[in-house]
Structure formats: C-alpha cells, structure tokens
Amino acid sequence: MIIYLLLALNIASIFICHQIAKSRGANPVLWAILGAAFGPFAIPFALMLKPESAEK
Image (tube, rainbow, N blue to C red; front, side, top):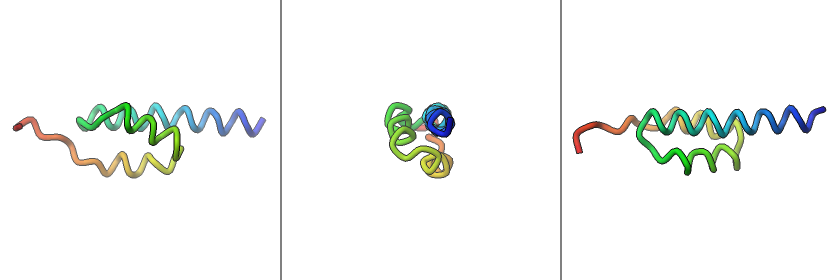
C-alpha cells in the first residue's frame, strides 16, 4: 500500500512541476523530469523560478 502512495506522490510531483514551469515560461519537460527524479523536493525549486518576461 505504501508503494502506491509513493507512486501517486511522485506522479503528482511530476504534474505540479510541469504546470509551474509552463506557467512561468520555463522548460516544462525538464521540470517534469526533475519532478520525477526528486519527487516533492523539486516543487519548491520550481516555485522559485522567475517568470519569463514578455519583452525579449
């Protein structure tokens, strides 16, 4: 049962990191991979991403 909980937590981390990165203009695939590798520990780092400005 614990393995299913950890798996669900890891999948949630992947989805959350992907969505945060997409909303801030970062590479969502990279952050999904980081979410898969580090689990919930990657979420605070994704939240620290600076939003990409529209002026490029």
